[in-house]
Amino acid sequence: QVQLVESGGGLVQAGGSLRLSCAASGRTFSNYAMGWFRQAPGKEREFVAAISRSGGGVYYTDSVKGRFTISRDNAGNAVYLQMNSLKPEDTAVYYCAARLGSPEVRDSRAYDYWGQGTQVTVSS
Image 1 (spheres, rainbow, N blue to C red):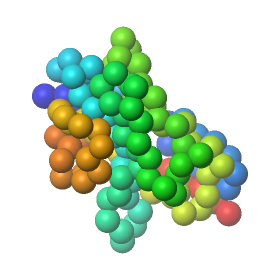
Image 2: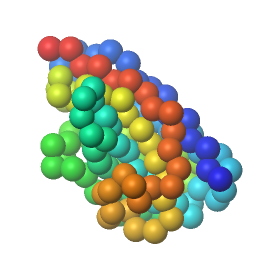
Image 3: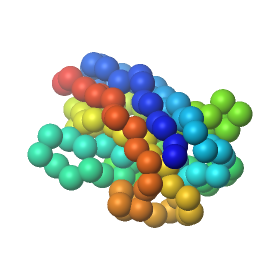
Image 4: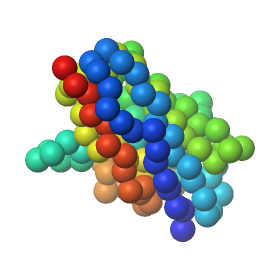
């Protein structure tokens, strides 16, 4: 089992920044690829970003490329999502997730463990 706890969400104006954190406990963190997903009201959960076990590979959905940065600290058992130039359409509950295997898979059903989510609201 892997337990994941997100933090760092909040209310920010358009153009602002937030940094989400996800603290992991349980199994060996460095064995897992990590991803961030988001879900807006009335919409499907969607892939945002993912990072490989070593941190050497990162992947983003097109709408956040150049604005969001995913990173991880294997010694500290944490993964982060730095979000800059936020837009109202980024408003959603953000979840971190863990999976054994490739971080290139963007289907949320491929992820094994999930946090409870943190709300991000971007006002216009």
